[in-house]
Length: 360
Ligand SMILES: *Cc1c(COP(=O)(O)O)cnc(C)c1O
Image (cartoon, rainbow, N blue to C red):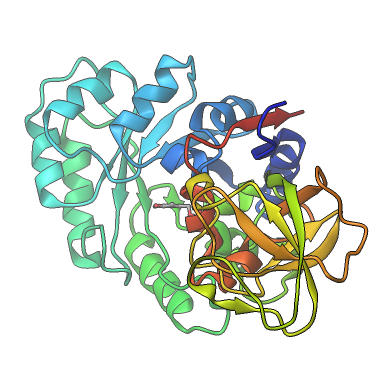
């Protein structure tokens, strides 16, 4: 028998989540973001499932785009950070990739390149995130230079990125939208702004292209309940199983550093998953897990290959019982909060060691 630890990928859920995004933004085209190995799910697996459902895909680097092209993905692919050196433009040309232009350097590389065909360019504007993008004042002249360059197709898309769209009360998103509208108002270009929280909560930011990532994998980007986000279905369910059981007396401790102490006579289940399998080491005592579908809590530090769980209140727990670490009925974001991080990081850090098993 194989080790029972696996990340189950539910492609029906992926399909459902794309439909949720489509219904929320019926007049927008959909660019599915599959960077960072498809948020840890496996880039080729999710890109193959998303290719027929999305209008384009997006990745962070040309290496990620090459992996998809080599796997036979023909959909348009946008490089969200553009190229990192001029030589990559020739490869982008050969692979028919779309490139972000977000600063003067990238623009000059493009203007000076010798390409077979013009590239589809996405001009990024910095409306307040202050990470990538040209300033609002530079946008018009840079846009004009793209129109003048034979290396850019005739219709560059203008886009921006939100810093706080997951904070529904923050004034920053309305402020970014206002700046973006100001910049675009006199430029005849298609526009894009919305990441997952933008798709879910900021309809005025849907524009011509939405760019969801996290929500496609079925996870809510919000810390609080949200009807649309909570209708998503997790694409990844991380499962393992109980491999050992013991009773410990009140006062005994469990695990490395003896950080958990039994307050009552307790039953401890050992589960074969640890930080070497993508379960966060910082998950604190009390982090929820599902044993036989019922909630139990982490007891003691996460080891490399195992965790220990207090199953005192699930007395019929047996060796071999399935344990769910996140996914169906246990949102990854909830687990992440117990580990001082966000679901994005947990999902993205899933290592190759954990087998991905595709369902659907
Ligand atoms: C990662 C990324 C997205 C997707 O963000 P999510 O919050 O995962 O939906 C969209 N646009 C850009 C520019 C990104 O870098």
